[in-house]
Image (cartoon, rainbow, N blue to C red):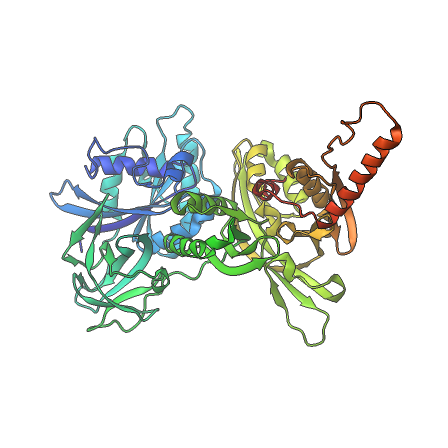
Length: 598
């Protein structure tokens, strides 16, 4: 165990974690030159296309130190985006040290700070690394001062490196050996292994990734999953390199995988403890708490016959991404589907794309919202959860609604402060703190309703600050708000998938925007379509799509006008009848476009 080092790579998005991980893989010759590619650990197409890490990736490296000892490194590369912070918390639980990477051209950003606090909570040894020092715009001295202020370390402890050129990699390797402690544990104690990730393989079933805290695991051992109580045989165990490498024994302090032939994704839980049946451990490891979704949206199959396939796909995705939650729901407009919980809008977008690419599921997503609490005026009634606009009682029966608030930290340059404050105040926020970290970097703290940042807040923040603002938030509490349900009616029929809960001040503007957008998107019919937005019984906005006109008088060449009138009257009657029985088809694009409204 003295020769083991378990560490993860943490940073803000785009600070070069995956590129630096590539250099570590090259340096230790874990990947041959022929197999090397950019973002070598990112195995999803979406990750490469977008240039972001979505999943944590574990891999084992071997390093010959200058003292002649061969060390085994277990490296976990983590995502940087705020929506995937749950992945980071799980990876941190499986490590003793962390490389904190800071981009020398951008300095410390919001996610850098929140990931650092996560690592400090788990008592990890922090090794600060200044990346991208080869760039002309690198502010080495300035960013070094920021890191010293943040961590309180000595400037000599900060390693200067470049993920592009490979500079500083040798120093990083030496620092990992010298500074990161070896795993603590008792190889002779009963087996205790923490599951920190899992994937589904259609041939092998569920593959669980674990870190052994105490004891050893041998191939063929009978094992028990403590929280679910299920018992299995360890059919195959091994360690994680670029491919899975089979082993007879995985020792204390090591990170590996186990295949037990589980086919049901429900039977395995991330954060569970694995132990042996013949010599079980006395208690489960305190893993990570259940994740709290921030954004809820309905996901419905385009064809109702695909409901069960969609359930299977979501269960398999949940194995790979434990921060996704879902439960069945039904909608008048869309039939049967699922109410899914996500950590943010990017998370929602990625899940939708993965369902399409990995499981061929064509789905419709409804307008995202957050969870509210409401209380009705009935005597003795309790507060209840409102997950969809349909759950909200009639306004006359409603006593109050509470919505979730968050505390947001925004770090930016001073010249963008005005436009950032305008944006936050427009989103019903209030400013609580403003601190200058350095003369060119300012940290602002706002209290905001979560519902206001769900849609496009992050995108707008990036555009008004030209990409220089970084954003992170923590949930606060629930507060009473004046919220109303905005309904969209097509020819008098409500479309429940388009209704939303909005603040009374913004309800009218929101209704107008949706009506205008739907007018552009809905195809014209043989009859008139009235698009209306209403709050309760009051209609606040209306657009009309005029009917497609067929020229029924084309066959009349000249002649008496009464003949033409007769034909037009006949057509008018037909159109009236058609409008009474005509159903309006809402294309899938309309649902997606409504999500993009500013």
